Image 1 (cartoon, rainbow, N blue to C red):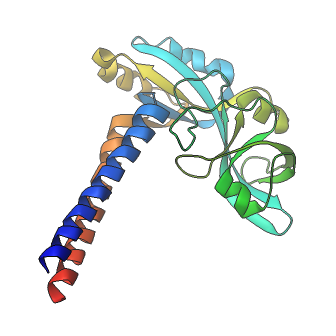
Image 2: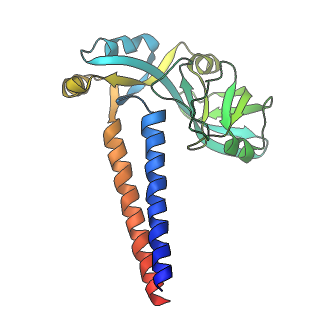
Image 3: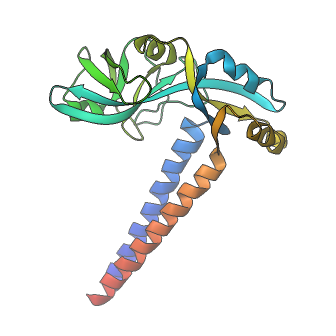
Length: 231
């Protein structure tokens, strides 16, 4: 009984350590911005200049995100297709060693898990059924398959995605780096901008995620302890 109880305690600590590592990778290494904003509708890339002019904003990077069904024969997976800046530094794709990956400047990058689910490999073509806006159906070659650290991303360079969608240079939102001393005034200014649908504070998202994980792990620890007491 004592050995089992100690085992449960060690397992719980390992779970907490794993969550802490994942939070560090997601919110410190991958997401290096302070705020993210979503536009009500996709806006021309030049619209981010209004964000850059806000006092306290240090850097802005646009992002284009579209929801899609990825088809390969009878296999279908729903994902967000994310168009990053090729030289972007505020939100990055990580490999399984928590190293930033280059954004492909041609074609689509897929995680190995997503590629396996679709039974697709580099050089194949995937059909994207876009499920928003004008809902076009397009085809893109798979240019790279990576072992992603978090999630099963489908991503490309923002201009590549714009061209594939036969649209001008548009962004769905942006990532902002902000001076800590001016965060409150920046948030107040963003609140006044009708073009923005949502504003997300990265640290608030981290805290919310941590709270949910702590609650989940706490429940699991209690259940495991109760289970151990019955043995």
